[in-house]
Image 1 (tube, rainbow over the protein chains, first blue to last red):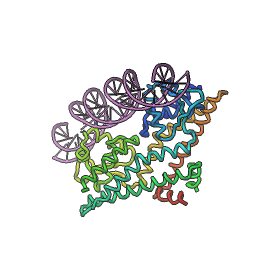
Image 2 (image 1 turned 60 degrees about the horizontal axis):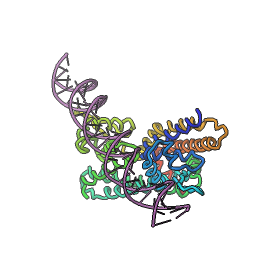
Image 3 (image 1 turned 180 degrees about the vertical axis):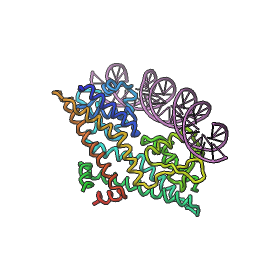
Image 4 (image 1 turned 60 degrees about the vertical axis):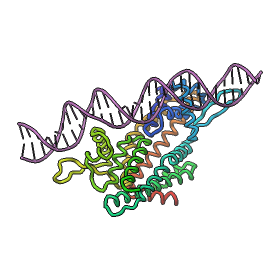
Amino acid sequence: MEFKEAKNKFVQTWGALGSQWGINKTMAQIHALLMVSNEAVSMEDIMDELQISRGNASMNLRALMDWGIVYKEYKAGERREFFTAEKDLDELAVKIARERSKREIKPALKILKEVSSIDSKDSAEEKHFVEQTSKLYDFVLKADNMLDKMTEFNENWLGRLVLKIMK
Amino acid sequence: MEFKEAKNKFVQTWGALGSQWGINKTMAQIHALLMVSNEAVSMEDIMDELQISRGNASMNLRALMDWGIVYKEYKAGERREFFTAEKDLDELAVKIARERSKREIKPALKILKEVSSIDSKDSAEEKHFVEQTSKLYDFVLKADNMLDKMTEFNENWLGRLVLKIMK
DNA sequence: TTAAACTTTCAAAAATAAATGAAAGTTTGT
DNA sequence: ACAAACTTTCATTTATTTTTGAAAGTTTAA
């Protein structure tokens, strides 16, 4: 396999993986492309390599920047903007975890708390509902806190964590 | 908020959350419904509560059973089948982790290994590509192994893990 | 063996999500 | 202030995913 083919395969695979995890394909592909580029890439080049429209490129670059995993870069003497990805994987994982926690887990916790707080009166059905949703609330809260703790580690947290777990 | 409303809110929220994580809405809703039911539910009732077609119910129940998080149950004297969800959350998390690892992470690892194995010849561009994808391979492998380790813990792994991490 | 009671399948339809591209908006150099 | 160079927005189109429902399949009881 030669470079160009490998690069393409990587970008496509990452894109497909992204969509399985609720991140749109183009967003994941752009990120993949930037991850393996040794220098900042212009929007023009991104459009060209991924065969996507200007609007699509623009919107997804914006989204990636909102997630804090892609940065704008300015080159001296160049009018247009260039983009680079966060390449440190620990940092990347932390940022993704934070963002998903904020966007999805936190709101879900709010709902869980709400629905588990009804008074279950007397029926077994209602009692079971409250019990189950309360357990779920505790579980999700604990998992979310774990993510928070991980982000505090920050340097090479995954490696350290693996060590700890394996005892 | 009264029971019926709370239950509905829970099912809807869980469904929305599912789709953000690459699991289809109905599948997540059925699972939610079964999670909070104190007894096994017939397909008829599932169709009725979620307002979905027979085919949709059937296919998604099948998928949930493939994931190992929903079970068929037979009631004495009843012709039709009833369904229950895995209600133990540790067990649930373990099964989901295993399944996603098998379906998504393992294949991704294979591709990463492949593309990071090209010989990078001389250009800085190619060297950077190989370096980045190799790092990614190591990272994903480590994360996946961590999931495996967790599944071995099995009893209340999340709680124990939280204790360990917080030292 | 038959038919009633139930489940599964899958081609087609509907719903949802993503992409396009032209127009509007910005920024920068002169 | 102007216009060239570039970016963003968003209504419309396109692609993808999910759902439907009728037909085919299966199981069970008599």
